[in-house]
Amino acid sequence: MFATEVVRRICVVFGQTIIGNAPTIAIPRGLPFCVACVSHLRRISRHPVRRQTARLAICLGLTWLSLGHAAQAADDQPAQEVVARVARLFTSQTSNATVDMQITKPDFQRKVSMQFWSVGESKILVRIRQPPEDAGTAILKVGDSAWMYLPKANRTVEMPASMMTTSWMGSDFTLEDLVGQSRLTSDYLIATSFQGLRDGTTVSEYTLTPKPAAAVVWGKITLEVRQADLMPIWQHYYDESGKLVRQLSFSDYAYVSGRLIPTRLIMQPLDQAGEQTTIAYDNIIFDKPISEEIFSLKNLKP
View 1 (cartoon, rainbow, N blue to C red):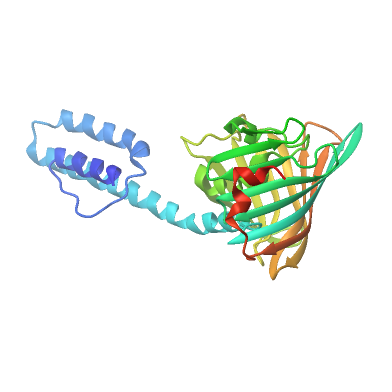
View 2 (view 1 turned 180 degrees about the horizontal axis):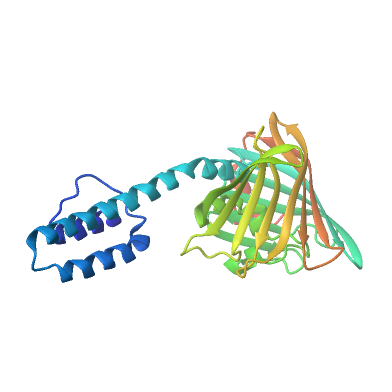
């Protein structure tokens, strides 16, 4: 609405009137055109007919650029819907999942068993079951706030936002990877970057670039999905310099509680040879009622 008013006022200055809500996302790209027209307008300011023609040209140019970019934005709506669908694969009205996480490093291996409870995308509880030394550790996320229960210290601490993007339990996943996938559609601009055949499968690839005000760590994310069933195949993460730094692979697709999902996820940091973390969903139940008391600070302590 603000941008539309800007275009309207620019045109009024030049003696023209815009009726309706013409989009103006293209104003930055149209500025060189406007500057050139204004310079020309100054040169012909003593000729009323030419001046009027120049004013009209500026307004028509802005409108043309705006409408062109609006069409491009509309074309990206299907891409946003696909990415949103992928982000919601493991959530529903409610979900309850048992997950095994296998951490593989060059010098050791470690297995962590967890249980997840969620209501939509706003309330999530993660509790560690194994190994014994970590059993009872829990994460509660309600809205944008998160807390962690530390059984060894017998205390609950509020988690700063920075902890959501650090390694979880020594793995290659972050808490943001596990419980923050819904932010992909709110923090990133999404565009279709490829559609066609790859390795015998018809796929679509989407490129996610951070919105200007988004507090994210990735310079870009790309996602490939199968066109037939919209199942994700891989997700690539790039740093701010454009270097590919890690990749997430999806596999072992199966129907669980009537829903097709990838039950195996592998995260690989590309700068650490022989290192990866595998998440396997042993069981997941969708849309079974969950008590609201589950998502309370009191319930963090088992």
